[in-house]
Image 1 (cartoon, rainbow, N blue to C red):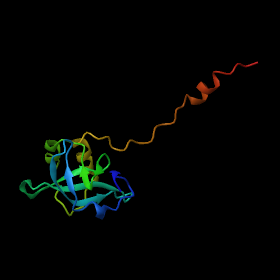
Image 2: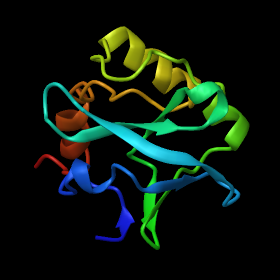
Image 3: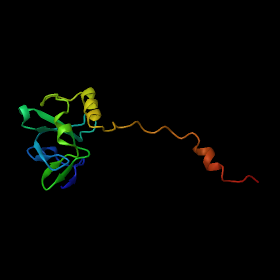
Image 4: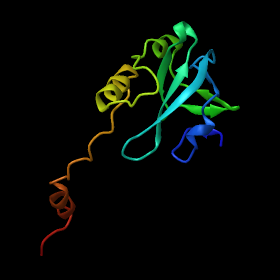
Length: 129
């Protein structure tokens, strides 16, 4: 499957793929894929950057599969500066939050509060007789 990395992709198909940054510069190879605890959806990829043999965590949601490679829509410098939590371990909710903030991504917002004025607004257009 090419295109946006979506929930139906097999995470094992990402491991070993080359990864490129926003400018098309190679940043490394996908080393591991991390799934969301609640949904089992692939959420993060650990990219082996080659720099000091460390892995950089990148979000899969805005990333794309292009010509068999993972295209991460962030600059190389930002990716390389991502918090390093080590691979092979579970990401805690706090660590995930740090990663979301690092990339400037919104954390899943709570559902919107019900609009309490909706009933009044809907009824205002009717004239009472």
